[in-house]
Amino acid sequence: MELRQLEQFVAVAEERHFTRAAARVHVGQSGLSAAIAALEHELGDALFVRTNRQVTLTAAGQALLPAARRALAAAQEGRDAVAGIRGVLHGRLHVGAIQTFSAVDLPAVLADFRRRHPAVTVRLTHDAAGALARAVAEADLDIAFVDGPVDARLTRVRLGRDRLVLALPAADPLARAAEVRLDDPVLRDRDFLAYRLDSGLEAQISTACAAAGLARRIVAEVVNLHYLVEFVRHGAGAAILPPGAIPAGDTEIRAVPLAPPMYRDLCAVVPGRRPPTGPAQALLAAISSAAP
Image (tube, rainbow, N blue to C red; front, top):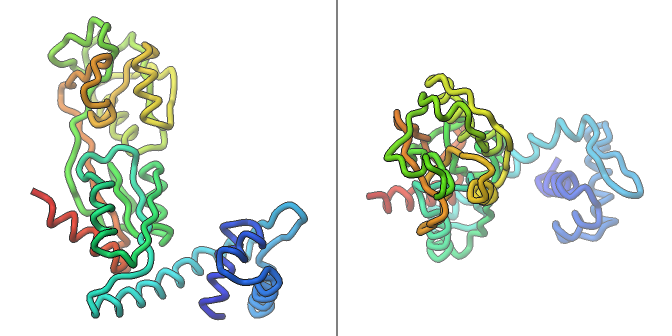
């Protein structure tokens, strides 16, 4: 079993299409098919179910995929380590991030990283914190910027925290309050909007509300923070949000502080059972040096 075969296998598994996978790994389709057939022969089991319309993984293919990704990641780490001795980084940096991450100006940091390390290709993915943490643990991402508790398989680097606010339309009478207590009876009859229920943010909000005895009446779940803010703007309900989700200078939405203060922790996560890749280490070093 060779790394090239594993790379080709992963390409087919992710593309679910031999023609697209062949283009991705720069081989002919017949050559790719022959390589996969040779790998299946070596392993003694079929890895894919092939039909005219799609390619799907067999149980054997599903079992091989995580190990193949880890092997490819380890090989890349080796190349990065050798390149790092020469002071040169190359390869890929796969970054994951939640939608609002105020502790770091991530676009600015990544742009500066690219200027410093032009031989590194950066890929940025957005998802819920739990999904991003799992992707780091399974070597699908090199580093992720998340909130809340994380997988025990990861190393957590604390970067800051947000004090959450109650977002309301400016015309709402409650928007004029200096602060709102979570146990205030006025919130019990309110309609609330929630960010995706599988997110670390929502988990922290639910825990704090439960501690205050507030059972929010959630009337909508929105998986995009921009649209969630727009729902608030149009009077669909109140929302507990990080302040960075509300556009700066917005006069139509008020951010009212909550009491007791409700915070969400912000951190970077890297694998805990193996060293971070060279590019991931360089990114963390750049963030640490830029911190006040």
